[in-house]
Length: 183
Ligand SMILES: O=P(O)(O)OC[C@H]1O[C@H](OP(=O)(O)OP(=O)(O)O)[C@H](O)[C@@H]1O
Ligand SMILES: Nc1ncnc2[nH]cnc12
Image (tube, rainbow, N blue to C red; front, side, top):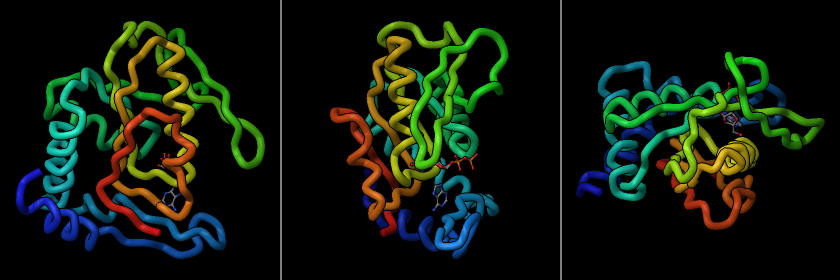
């Protein structure tokens, strides 16, 4: 990481707005879009993600963006690194044959999907999302990718809500990295 890394992280942090009681009472919502509404911060965030990937996940062969805010960052870094960008989406959004993974939510269940044939056995995949809360989305995406034969080499998020202990829920052995942490 370059010498200005911590300064750049603080600059990024200063651009992220939070909204109390959105989308439900009691939730403090961290709005990643507030950090990319101006050009210099967009570039700063992209370069921090790329720098982090080069340092921590140098062997990555494909980035996997989680619907929908994860797509912003997966495409941006994939283009910069000239590697593939594959989406994991919620049920019914991807055309063609898909592989599905059903997982438990606080109330009920949800299903994630990836297009069949996009993951070759042993493909070194890095999962990217805007935020880790409970870790449920990343955990489900990890299991979906592993069921397709992927080698999930880690996951990367812009924001991590540490008090929710999401990283403890993510399967052991999957390195987790976040740029910014909030309690
Ligand atoms: O760690 P978790 O508890 O799984 O929560 C984090 C996930 O929740 C949000 O996505 P959401 O499902 O709200 O979809 P969106 O990106 O389309 O708004 C966020 O973008 C992460 O993907
Ligand atoms: N508190 C939060 N802010 C923004 N996105 C979220 N996704 C899950 N929890 C969130």
